[in-house]
Image (cartoon, rainbow, N blue to C red):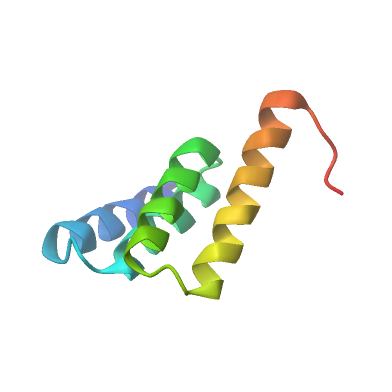
Length: 79
């Protein structure tokens, strides 16, 4: 668990240093996914997409996060 916390700390620092850098938000999302905080991960990936709307890697991460969020809330199986 501590690795996820460290990754999140690093990502949040990257966001502070470069608030217009999509990769910072992507890293926040990745850390949140590791911590199983799917709502926050989804939001971070959406923020990254707003800065870089054609980035397919971010788009895929967003889809995965929202799928995990849906399954965690509704107990749905993945398709």
